[in-house]
Length: 90
Image 1 (tube, helix red, strand yellow):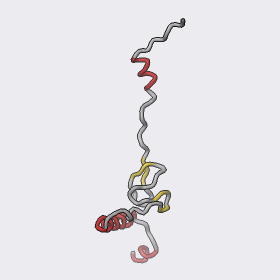
Image 2 (cartoon, rainbow, N blue to C red):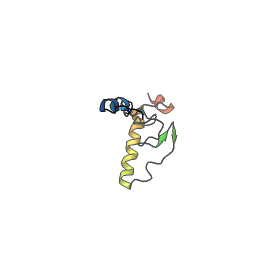
Image 3 (cartoon, rainbow, N blue to C red):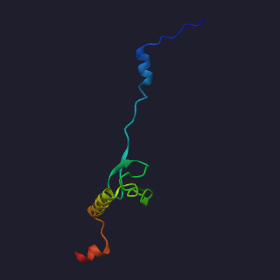
Image 4 (tube, rainbow, N blue to C red):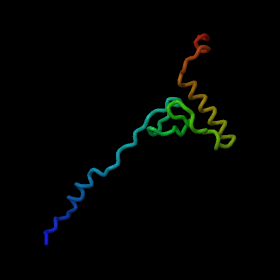
């Protein structure tokens, strides 16, 4: 018969030291600027890499839908994207 190796708490802890969870990596959405998990659709505006994949307003009630539209418009204005009309007004 072979002699069994010792099984202590410290040996178990050393083995499990690599099992810890890593932090979630967050990126800023290119459209609305909200933080979202990488390689996933933005929960705030429903876009991924500049394309619309999810209609965020579809499941909201009428009151929530109006508030969400106003919020998205405010974020677009805040982003400061310049177009021909805004440049000609200055």
